[in-house]
Image 1 (cartoon, helix red, strand yellow):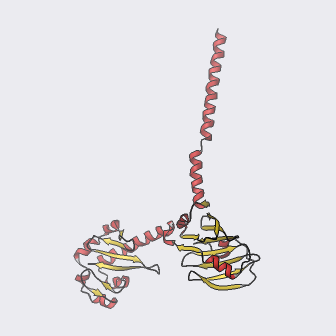
Image 2 (cartoon, one colour; image 1 turned 180 degrees about the vertical axis):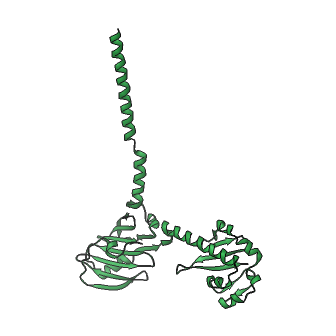
Image 3 (cartoon, helix red, strand yellow; image 1 turned 60 degrees about the vertical axis):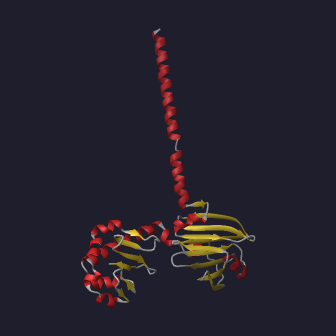
Length: 288
């Protein structure tokens, strides 16, 4: 009897251990969440995407629109290159764009140029057609984005132009996460500078920061720096505006409704500024 009891006890222990083993195995194999998360990250940086909207996070938008186009596919390479591959009237083609890659590093093709070069333009931007062995390649760029178009056969200039005229490209550089973050940091630094200039009544520094002509909220106007310097100090640096531009005002830095300007101060007494085309910041409105 005692022997039988020992046997049953051993069987129970064995079953328990076996159950634990399966449990650990199941836990070890249940990587669906981690796997899904990893896949999402990889798809964001590389691989096919559903539409060219995914390219905007790279700082650009590219596409092709034509009744002669088939088999259009979108993908991201190296985390920074937007690619639209398609067949145009039987020709295999690739349209690429990037804010960080350019020319042959962007096109991902070997430089086999024959020296046959045509200087022209694409969408108003200076472009260059190259004849390769085999293939045709086009390079151009706007302010921040580099583009390339490649067809795998040595098509004529007329055919290349016909295809290129169907390409769609837009600059969305400011929408890049790194650029947007840098812009946010720069705008906050500029807002701090505004607060310091007003609190210390640095008229000469303010004169350099203003975009002219300037119509102040208090009714004064300044067509240039000299006219701003002539405005009485108490009219320019009003007490109510100085109160609105306290150090705490930085915490309430905000965008205008149309998203084109930054505002610091209260709803009634404030300073508006914006990032200009050359990348600098200027004060565009003083509601004193």
